[in-house]
Length: 225
Image 1 (tube, rainbow, N blue to C red):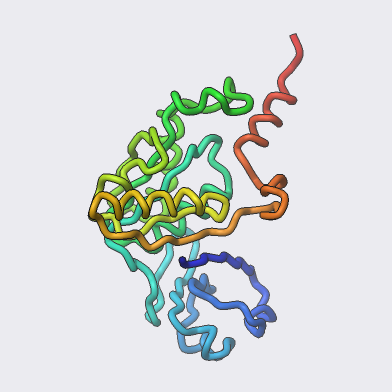
Image 2 (image 1 turned 90 degrees about the vertical axis):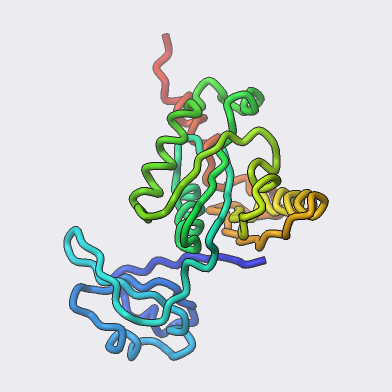
């Protein structure tokens, strides 16, 4: 399994001397890969992509490349009231995918037992939010949004899929997917695990950033009639 961590540092070069490992660098306009590399230890620069930001444009700075590892990647979720956790998951999936991203989105029928279900966004709304966000990230990526009606979804049927992106709390589902694929004569998927935002595994991620909590807050903020 592959763990994906995200560290975001703005305008503070002291962190460049830390032990953090960098995969993507967003640099001031006019920077070069060579000058930025001097700020980092060599092992931190290995397989790092660099981009220069200037007003509304992003310019690639030539340097080592470590993205587009898989032609076809899949991920799945409810994606209700899309939040930072969802965006990180989608960002990682887009970053490692070169051609085709298949995103399973839980259909309304499977959400009847969710807390505050009356505040869950419709399937169409959730699809729209996911599609628009990926379009911002990587407009040339082919994106397929499909209704998710079981644990496997398209990963249990599409042999071309090479990688599955999951959050740490849904790793068990990824193991089920690979077992199903093996039973059906398909290659096992590489599992890319993204950490959960907030909470701890020991207490079941009780304090994680979640759509359920967003819905609870929406309900408590409703005016009483």
